[in-house]
Length: 350
Image (cartoon, rainbow, N blue to C red; front, side):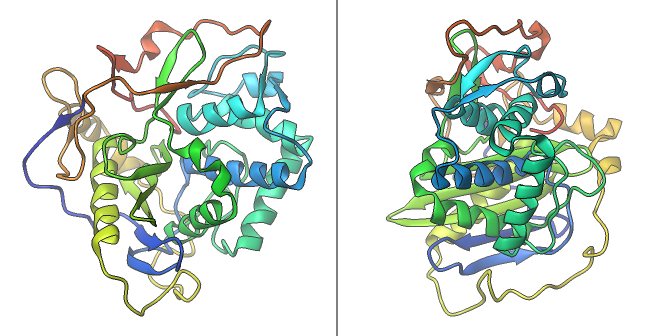
């Protein structure tokens, strides 16, 4: 279980780009710095999933197609599955590992399988982003590892998330999984709202020092689906608290005439240069403060009154290698569970 603190919820800082929208109408319920360029980190994997879903829908590939780990894929830095080159799994399993474990090696393997080559797939990602009107986004890889030319905005991520929910409702289940298991090891979802926030059903988290802790979230109640984007939070718990606050407001606010994603005009500073908050996020002081954000049992402290404790282990679905596949043991130090309770450890790009 996560530690729920009943003290005041941290206020949403103007330093955190954010937006919350209603999916069916595209109505923007709240936004701040929505056009500020930001490093997407593993939120990039939403774009990877979208491009993959398009390939499946077109018939070029299926969720039962075989994904083979190449050396290039296996050589990606963590977070990863540590599968050896030549190991094989279905695209269905690969998507689950991509979106729940946020595995960088799986992202490259999927890209090579769907695109024929990594470069071709990245070109498809950018073509899809342009077609969707993600005018302030560009991708250089399918996993979100940092590099020059990889950037997005809160507004563009909302456009992407809405497109995924509208165009591919049959694949919504990939984003709401509580966890996955390879048969040897179980991985909980880094999204702390899944199973803890009423109606939470997606979508993805991401972290690198330059971006801080990012999260795209979705929730559905009474047939109404809303999506929030929070960028640059200072911790895992903070991004969950902020996301819960936005989702709750959107789900309980009566919609009125106003701006939509399509009519929201660009505004604000930070549109010409990608913001880098490494100095604030990965300083010694910031790391110490994050360690103090856990209780005496090591559980993450969450402040939102809308996030409840999970009184059971997360439900995990299978997402492992095909029979005959091999996987090397992950280092014991990478464990991210304590007493069967999901406690995600901050690592690059999740």
